Image 1 (spheres, chains in turn orange, purple, red):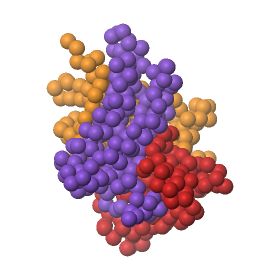
Image 2: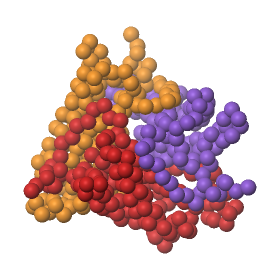
Image 3: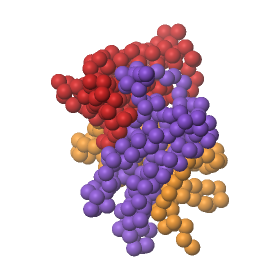
Image 4: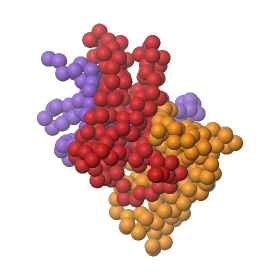
Length: 148
Length: 148
Length: 148
């Protein structure tokens, strides 16, 4: 049940020529990163049938001072922000968490290379171990990957 | 302040004939399940004025391997996923949490019966006890249910 | 990395004359409240480059009993709900958390004064200290505010 939820400023959904980016491609890239992540023993860190990346542009938002400092620094004042939150089950080692977190961070930074260079832009990734007190699932996806 | 937030693949918003479903009806069914849930003493587990179910289709998403395994298994490769997260206050008994969780799970599984049979589809429900360090509310809804 | 995520019933996005409100203005007001919040020593509680407020109307929702009690009480039965969730890093004092929480609550209540008077309406604010096990960021926003 590892999932990654992305909350972001809607200006990133603009055409690429206007500073936007392909967020569906980002979702795919991050899912692929999750699928490729192996632990010290070479086993997948995340079960393939449980990998999901969901991205949500904010319908309304306010970022920092609204643009004043950015314009004073010669920018457009049109800030961009992306928040990535991975929630996964308990029990993975510190090393595995750090390795997976860094792999996702690098994947995201690579995707937003242009924004980081051309816009006042922030990207934050946080990984949580779910504090759930009840957890249940049903899936016809998992069995696709449990065949021998 | 119990609330249930549903994150899901937008393909579920398609017309029913194309594999979609009525997500507003799901919200209502789950809210009704919450309203009907009683503890061992017969008291409502969730205050009626605080029951909310909010559902959000992802604007962009990536699920599992993107469809490869599903197509290889004879499916469309168009995976569906629903994540249901109930957040509630601390203090309910293990039995009550388990009972409420199972009631919501059954309600959701029943709603997605067709998807579970006809699509490669995953459904996960998690219940969290809120870890809030500050909690405040104001409401003209609660008083509707506190009259005698 | 303090951020405030707002989940709300989409009826609040209607024109003001029909009971709606300006949710972008709410985001700005809450961001300004965060920017203005100082701790006991007069220092900003939240780093300006990390302040973000993201608001999301629910695509589908169910609130309480769906309107029955509201109509019985002479209202329209069209309930409104706003959930505000601030997530911030660990380490702030209880006093600071309480002060910041109350400032945000007052800002939100002020914004929804009309809804609280004219609609059956609920507003809940919760502040979480993030339980993250991995935290990383990159930003060209923070440096705008770290100049001397």
